[in-house]
Image (cartoon, helix red, strand yellow):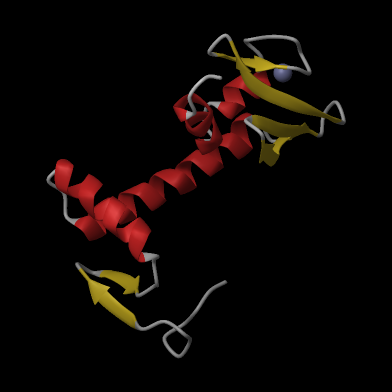
Length: 129
Ligand SMILES: [Zn+2]
């Protein structure tokens, strides 16, 4: 959704670029501020770079794997829809390695795609049972 100067957001210029003010959850902001601090970055620049990277990543994924899309994440299983084969791949950790239940493989396009998604970090961060 786009907003113009008369819209919901205040339009200001900084460093020759238009900026808008948005609300970010304080919890998220505090985490990002801490991360920025570790890198000795300005918090605003850091947040903008993280967002720019997310946009780049999505653009890359759409080019690299236009038929794939994330459909869900539940019980440490990531579901990726493959429109090309008309099936959904289930990606999970098997012996601490990502595994695709659809291809029965550790090295397929679904795995490659999964590595670009934040859910994979969640899988690895979760303690093995
Ligand atoms: Zn696969």
